[in-house]
Image (cartoon, rainbow, N blue to C red):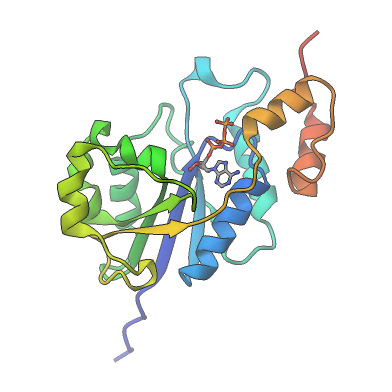
Length: 219
Ligand code: ATP
């Protein structure tokens, strides 16, 4: 009889990644190391077609994330939300991920504080913790109260040590991180005005942007 495989620790970080930048990547790598994850998957979100950046397709966003993580063993890309033709609910993504994992594998959903506070508006939000732990990425200087609907949940499910959340799912913990002051909005604006984004994105992403002439102001 073969010995059972040890439980894996898998994190997921969703985003539009339009484009992926060093803020996303540093944050992801730091969490992967702190949490001793086997894998942290960057998961590009589908957007309604009218909200896609002109000239940049979902396939371009995906290709840039793939280039960005190439060679970084802890980081990978999960394209399942782009394989569908409409935006996915997180609960559906988690169910789909869970169906591929062993029952005792640990799944960590990474959320910024703002996204976490918006949780009560999410489809079937009360079921999320059946499938994953939630890791809230919080800024060290933040001093904010959670919305009323989340207080009971936090009281019942909070774990003080994010690295020691037990079991495959069900707990909430916080990681304090100082984000790099870079955003995809800033990168799109720089490119649209003909400026360089070197050092804000990995060189391979910069090469892709240049080769495909992305984010330029249309003339
Ligand atoms: P935009 O400027 O287009 O709104 P963005 O740079 O915020 O984009 P998203 O793709 O929306 O990027 O972000 C995906 C995830 O990465 C979110 O959870 C977001 O909070 C986080 N994130 C964005 N920028 C940073 C950063 N500089 N450092 C750490 N995390 C970041």
